Image (cartoon, rainbow, N blue to C red):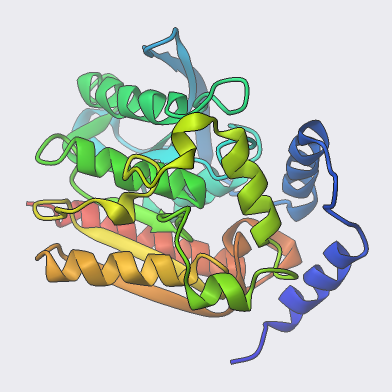
Length: 308
């Protein structure tokens, strides 16, 4: 399939600017601006900010819940880790996305504002993600979450964090994982990395810059930053993996799905035709992205409700 026509127009718009030499501050503001422009939102979702205990101090987080949902019964919960290359993004850039996940999936979503590089070199982000899942699990009842229906997920680099959290907490409180356009092998070489290295929103130069900003630990092939390189994937929770046809990290998502299946992990992998990286967060700029995101949420909610 060819590029979705709305995606093509979006890429044309992005091509009018240049990412060469862009500062980190400008990139962060650009992501905030894109979130405002995309206008992704959902009605009927209540939110409240909260704080989770972290290894270097409190971690800011935000709870999303469909209005009217009965707290006393407990609802499926999703701890969500935003994308942004581990250097940008936050609660506000992914606010609309989390609202859609909560509403469409009938989920209580806890979005985590983990520490970013280069101010906080890797593994600060992973340490916060691990603390966040532990904190949410410990206070699940207070948050209105059924602890037997708790999942973790994220998009892009946040999905890579989610995958690694599942590996390090294997057999614990996580009952399903949602990986959207995941970055799973930062030093890998795949056809999609070459085919879509430039001109498809996420480019190879940006991946390299973000990796360099993460600090010394990012220089090696550690599975803590590249979960696809973990040797043993047995016993991990069921996975829902979503990749985009025109995404440089498409192939590593597919490779991870294949390895999970070989390890006996219940896995469903969907390639979204005509789409690019972050299509799910582009709201009114890419109209097909919103219904796809809603379906992703419904499917993951069903996955959690079916957890043994």
